[in-house]
Structure formats: structure tokens, C-alpha cells
Length: 204
Ligand SMILES: C[S@@+](CC[C@H](N)C(=O)[O-])C[C@H]1O[C@@H](n2cnc3c(N)ncnc32)[C@H](O)[C@@H]1O
Image (tube, rainbow, N blue to C red):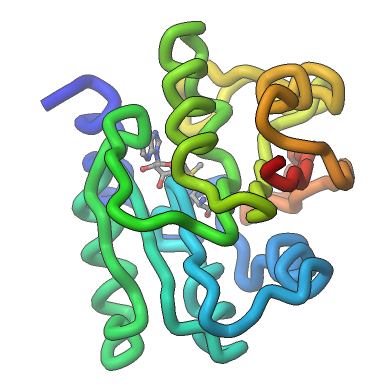
């Protein structure tokens, strides 16, 4: 098992959902991006490094049914599956390192909150970008949330790469047009703030 997978399997077997800094009861910002782009209900939507977050639940509640949840951690996927119960039928679960992902369908909406920023090695970052470029439909959307330059330098005890509007756009502008970026403070369950950058892009 890779060191990365080991780390995340351990997190999702030892910590409760609200014992991790990234916990959100409701993923308001992510849901607002879906609303902004008026995604049709039959869109293929993937949450990359989605863990056991409530984004999938929020999408099901809105009527989306072609959902994909990818995570490196089987424990995270199992937790999400168990919580979703009957609603799990709307979701294709994929246990994979994102940099090894070979998608079988194209996505209209690709969402990633706090997974991309764990890639600190140039080769891994380029792999992610190229997988996203190939996997997202023409005119489909990519939403990335990472720590900003005002945010922490670590997440879950691991080094992360911070982004600003320009450095994030640089990575994706070959195949995507940037639409909108926002910065926001996430209030952790430990009463601290983490500054995030969220940017949306549309595939050319
Ligand atoms: C900080 S958590 C964020 C979880 C979720 N996106 C959220 O907003 O609550 C990072 C997630 O990314 C997953 N992850 C980390 N590295 C990954 C990789 N290389 N491939 C796939 N998933 C990864 C972890 O297992 C974890 O679920």
C-alpha cells in the first residue's frame, strides 16, 4: 500500500467525521457552483477526493443521479456508502489514487475540494491536469478548492501546495477558460479558520 493510501485509510478508520479540519455540515460553496452553471439533472458529476463529505448527499437531494465519488481511501468510500443507504444507487464509487484514474465516462462537472492541493510533485500535478483534461466534456466544468496563500501549509498533517488565482489558472489554462475564483474562510470544528481558494473553469 502506498504511503498516501496508508495515511488516508488510517484517517478514515480512526477519526469521526467532525474530528477532521475539513468537515462541513453542508458544502454551501460547492453547491453554489452547481447552481451557477445550471447543471442539468442528468449530468455526470464527479467528486474527486470526496472522502465522506456531504457534497454527494446535497447533489442527490437536488435530484442529480449520475454521480461518481472517487477517493484513495476505501474506508472513506465505505463510510459514505453506509451513510447514503438506498441513495447509494445514484453513485458510482471509485477507489483509486486520482493520478492513476482511467475514467470510463466523460464528466460534465468535476469537483475537488482539498484533494488536488496534496499533490506537491510536478509530475503528479501534471498527471492530474492531464487526466482532468481528458475526462471532462467539452464545455464541462472544473471546480477546484485548495488552500490559498493565506491558508495553512499543511492539511491532515501532510504538506500541501497553496494556490492563488494566477498559479491555479497557469496549471489549467491550456485546456480550460477560467470563469470565477473566490476566497473564503472555512471554519473548522476546532474553531480555527482556513482560507480556501475556489476557482471554476470551463473546458474549451
Ligand atoms: C482534506 S480531505 C477532503 C475531503 C472532501 N473533499 C471534503 O471536502 O470534505 C482530502 C481527501 O482526498 C483524498 N485523497 C488524498 N489524496 C488523494 C489521491 N492522491 N487520490 C485520491 N484521493 C485522495 C483523501 O482520502 C480525502 O478523502
